[in-house]
Length: 307
Image (cartoon, rainbow, N blue to C red; front, side, top):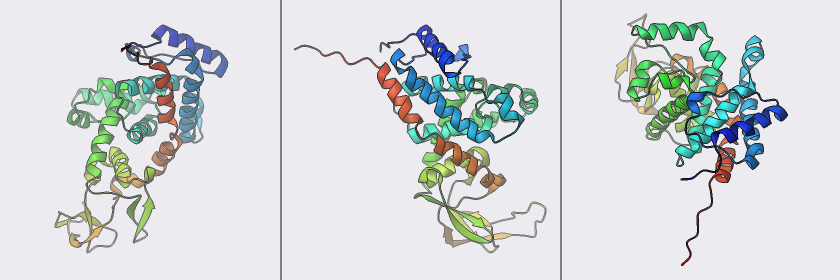
């Protein structure tokens, strides 16, 4: 396919935006090879995309020194460029899964190089992994063991393109799995000793579970049933388990006749992360349409063949 704009032309476009819109682009050369960009008359759409990304990320920083030091819009020029290119290469993508993947990058690292490359935890984790450790890395914060399962290169996680692709692949896989067990717009949690229904992210319980899986692990997905112990549920296919590692005398016995609709366990304290995931996801609602509009303008019209 022939494309209308070259890489050098986009640099001019974005530099013009930088002069007029406060952006100071800093390109990652590893992500600029074979990149396809919007037409010059779509510079406004590109700037709108960066603005949406900037507003979304800013809302997730909260207050404090980190936001002042690391919340730079120039990073998001790279993110916007990556999104446009990724969508062109994956034309049949699911918009809600793409938003979920981007949500993961924002939640895990704010998609900020400073939050990845300048963090002592990241550096120590990287060194540990060289000697067989299993620490989360990169913009998407993925462990080597998880990357191996999904055939993901750890090196790719230090680029936006690689991290976005990895997060999309993982969320999609978990989403397809979750659809076997979850449907509707609510998830059910234990709250103050009672089962309570909560709105799911994107009004999609399966999507909610797929997003939560990034922090809690894919094992949270499945059919869950009540047990003889208040506030504790078991997978319905598990007869019993000892939920307290420090007290083996406490045994939760599964009641297979009391399945919990769309149950969302709080494994690893994942419930506390979900409000931020939800905030990011909702704030990115306009991203797919902006990407499609930009890319549509960049696709040359089909040539008509005269009969």
